[in-house]
Amino acid sequence: MTLPCQRHLFDLPDEVAYLNCAYMGPLSKAVLRAGVDGLSRKARPWKIEPSDFFTPLETARELFSQLIGGDPQGVAMVSSVSYGMAIAAANLPLPRAGNIVVLAEQFPSNIYAWRQLALHNRAEVRTVARPEDDDWTRAALEAMDDRTAIVAVPHCHWTDGTLVDLQQIGDRARETEAALVVDGCQSIGALPLDVGVVQPDFLVGASYKWLLGPYSHGFLWVAPRWRQGRSIEHNWIARSNAEDFAALTSYTDSYAEGARRFDVGEVSNFALLPAAIAALEQTLEWGVEEVQATIAILTQRIADRARELGLQVAAEDRRAGHLMGLRLGSRSPAPLAAALQAEKIHVSARGSSIRVSPHVYNNDRDVDRFLRVLDTALRSIPTA
Image 1 (tube, helix red, strand yellow):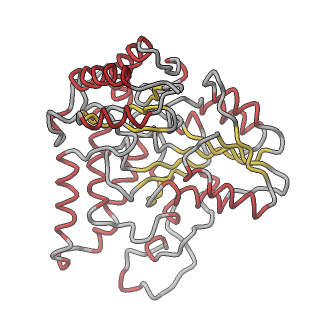
Image 2: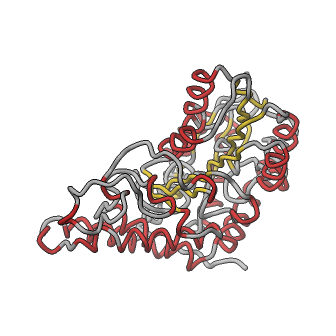
Image 3: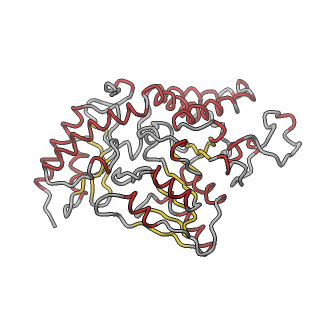
């Protein structure tokens, strides 16, 4: 099932073709209102009750857990993907001479924590080379062995949307007793994912891309066996009985239940949290499968025409429907990106590719304009 164009919910001028959600998703009008209303409460702090520090958090946990097929007890609020990765790295064992499997050209937030952990433990970060056939799943499985302690991969590659079969990777990881850490930043909200099926040890994602929420806010889902783990900061609200403000100096070593111990400090953000909740509600109302199906129609049109123009695009069964890279070969993406920008068509240049990432606010007119300018600009860009 697909959705009708949702452009009316966003503040997108008719002359702007925003095909760059993988860079940053726009806020809908409702999400913006929720953030502004939340921030305005800080102007009158005497109206902020102790319950306001807690009740919205539980609402957000419940909504996010619905999105990924998990349980609210496993959801922690984080500020970024890198924060969530730091929590995973602080809790996962890595023996000396063990290895951590990652993909080539992964986003840095899912690399630096593992490099540091490997250096500290005298272990190896094993980087899977980009496969010529775009089959990251096969390549990652071949890289895993009996010394693999952690597999840290995305659901789809941030540069071009090429897929990783997380169920296959998870099955193999459990066979070898390795932990699976998933970067869902470029997929959660647009590509279906069920933690009950994948069974990751840690899954982390940001609000500001495909969840169409605020910047500096994200979610971490933690598998049950790690929920008694070590937090990376010691904020008051993560402790048990934090709701009793009068007793906060009765210090305790016990934590709130579930993954709440991993919540980032000042987690009850009165502007970001209401916006994130509104964004989650909108995504759940649409349905992730419906979002994926709707966007895939647009990207398929672009892929078909791009191939006619001599560009390379990953096969449909090797890429997600919401995000793809148009590979220019020997052409430089810079002149093409500039030509598109001049026509108010927004995409990203990544390596030797143009990354195109529409959402449900895009329509056929946006695609038509993109393809027209792409065709014209390619004729003027020399090959190396």
